[in-house]
Image 1 (cartoon, one colour):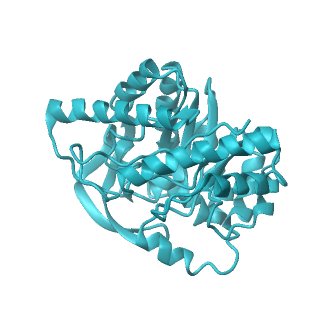
Image 2 (cartoon, rainbow, N blue to C red):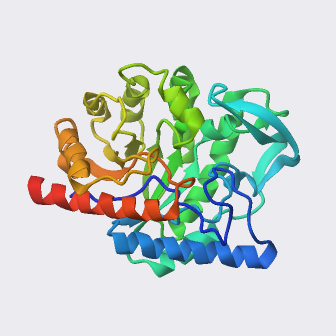
Image 3 (cartoon, rainbow, N blue to C red):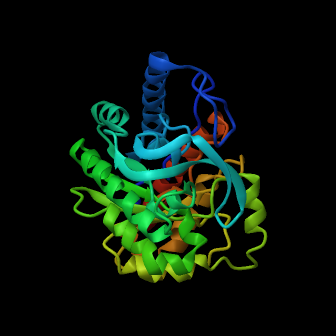
Amino acid sequence: MFETTIAGSLPKPGWLAETGKLWPRWRLEGEALARAKLDATLLWIKEQEDAGIDMVTDGEQSRQHFVHGFLEQVAGIDFDRKVELGIRANRYKALVPTVVGPLRLEGRVHAAEARLARARTRRKLKFTLPGPMTIVDTIADRHYGDRAKLAMAFAELLNEEARALAADGVDMVQFDEPAFNVYTDDVKRWGIAALERAAAGLACRTGVHICYGYGIQANLDWKATLGAEWRQYEAVFPALAASRIDAVSVECIHSRVPMRLLALLAGKDVMLGVIDVASDRVETPEEVAGVIAAATEFVPKARILPCTNCGMAPMDRGVAGAKLAALADGARLARERLA
């Protein structure tokens, strides 16, 4: 009960990339960079195991950014033709590449790190991929001319890589869709359909991560405008409950999401956000156990997987490690009290 996991990303060591940044520059090049990425993957697998996390991830150590790390292996995208784009409804600006032709995978995207992780841990292994809607919101389009069509094109490629990850022995493939909290009407029109296409036929568990974003200033400023209750989940939870996705990751601790909204996810596992990624303050086991206990009023105990609110890529490495331990200790405390 209360199997722990994390949203996905973890901070990159200073010898691998710039620290404290969401879009860090690599410190190395070529073969040295490829080796260092795998070394960092091993480091964080060990850190998660030592902390007591039950379902570990690769920490996204081989990706500069959670979206563009996938796009680097996609033909039809021009990385030399970058434009500044307002993403997440102009919440912040980013330099993004451009779709210039039909999309296709040039080969495996995450085979090296997935196979390394599977070979080096006996824990359950979760691997994350960007969701189709979030990719569409993080790239410029000069070919398809329609966001839904572009999302479906990406969903086909994501499904190809996800099936390969399942064959590599990954226990869960999770699609990251922070855009689901922004374009709620489009989620129902075509976002869920694209997500289900990306997850079709997988021989492993499937999940989707929706949150209010990394702990960067633009996201904090946006949250400050959302009022006393954050009800974006209310618009998409019923559609997700009716989908074929197995688990949904949601932001709960230190958020203004009404806990009762979790009842709208009936029939799904809930990766319950009990660790705040927007603060360097380390949660106590009591706080973590308290959020878990509150969620049990609306979600069956067996369906709760304590998790982080979002990824921890921009966070200080030491803080992230301490938060991993708090997550595991809090879940252990909740098991003792609620089993």
